[in-house]
Amino acid sequence: DPFGISLSLQKIGIEAENLGSSTGLDWLDSGEKAIASFSPADGKSIAQVQSGNAETYEAIIAQAQIAFEKWRTVPAPQRGEIVREIGNALREVKADLGKLVSYEMGKSYQEGLGEVQEMIDICDFAVGLSRQLYGLTMHSERPGHRMYEQWHPLGIVGIISAFNFPVAVWSWNAALAWVCGDVCVWKPSEKAPLSALACQHIAGRIFAKHGMPEGICSVIVGDYQVGELLSQDPRVPLVSATGSTRMGKLVGKAVGERLGRSLLELGGNNAIIITENADLDIAIRGALFGAVGTAGQRCTTTRRLIVQENVYEEVKSRLASAYSKLVIGNPLDEKNHVGPLIDQDAVKGYLAAIEKVKAEGGKVVVDGGLLSGDGYESGCYVKPAIFEAENHFAIVQHETFAPILYLIKYKTLPEAIALQNGVPQGLSSAIMTTHMREAEAFLSAAGSDCGIANVNIGTSGAEIGGAFGGEKETGGGRESGSDAWKAYMRRQTNTINYSTSLPLAQGIKFDI
Ligand code: NAD
Image 1: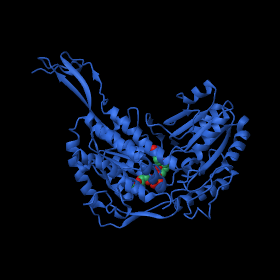
Image 2: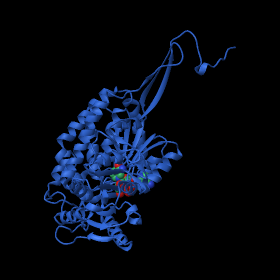
Image 3: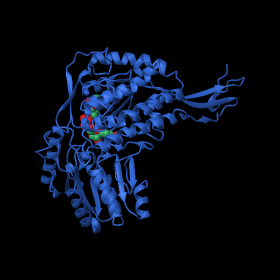
Image 4: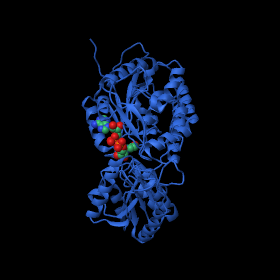
């Protein structure tokens, strides 16, 4: 245990050997077999976490329903106070939880810390929001009438999350849902169950301290079948699901069939346009972090670089030289830039994508491959790769969740924007330019079709203050800042008659 993982777990309040149930609740035993949590950093098993099943799911939902009856009556600013304490508890365990995330998921320790910081930030945001759940007032067309709207909690919010942001995605949803008066049932990725249980312990303790019922904050570990229980359950009015487009289509369909609400945060195929007016120092740094950060396993990872022909050769050679300096290895060792992929299946997907781009006519700029030998025993470490490719290649149209970057050449900006938009996904996009006309054209109604469009920063690394999400096959959902909270509430329009008569709207007469 060279990085002190056991100690970190203890500080968070959990002991690996003693996790027991799938829910963080000692009394709830599903009797199911355990899911092993493996670290892609060294291939070792960290802990065994029991999987939930239909029975434990029922117990969790029953508990959440009871909790909602209480929680919805707690004034929103008081709910915010509890979320403030959860943020403070996260501040205390930032280093330890960041380390666990890094070890279990494989992102660098710095990015693990960043992920916990995002959780703290969204808690702060939610505290302020708890006093700002504003509705509008309207002028009634009828004399002696008043109209306004108010926002009420929805009920149980189901959260299905992906492996690559094993804790932050939950907090974006949960912190907002809680101040909105909802209760949360979280089905984390089966590839990172321990980080989820750690969060449950951290937040659960705060609710317990305030005498709040357990069901405000629940987790149920399991695979897609537990996710299906949530998406098919009419007692769950909102399912917020983060993951692949394949999963989103299934969840969207199941939730749609019962006319529930879904909030979908799915795959991206993000591009940076580098124009001939770009500051190339910034462009190269932005592209590098975007393409290889988190080993290419961010939904906002830069997958395509669309480069103007006059600067194309320079960008290509500077990037290749930057790639040659990347140090790949254990994510907890801060000298390394790139950690492992999540598991060996992901490695297979990466290797297959490299075969495909070559078969479709892509040219190698920096070749990829699986690393072996000292430090790479887990079999999950791969070399970040760059290929010259065409936007229409089937493999370029597809999101491969690994560090593979495609270089695409363009002549005119309209052509570059058409290439950037010419994929099924629509999450994040960026332009590197110092030219105001180019930047504004990219941001205009005829520009990027993505949910996120940046100028002179890369495609990844969003702040919590803005609404996060994307269009097309990315699913259309928005989470986190701005007015994303509205997805977690139901709007009620109220008309009050304080006059002595009963006029009908639109001047309709109905007298007997
Ligand atoms: P995944 O789709 O394999 O799994 C995501 C979650 O969905 C897991 O918890 C899984 O158990 C569950 N699931 C799978 N099938 C299901 C079903 N039929 N019904 C209910 N639940 C089901 O994704 P992953 O490999 O964990 O994550 C990588 C993907 O997530 C990438 O495509 C990435 O772009 C995307 N992602 C998107 C965002 C975003 O905000 N847009 C953020 C992070 C990750």
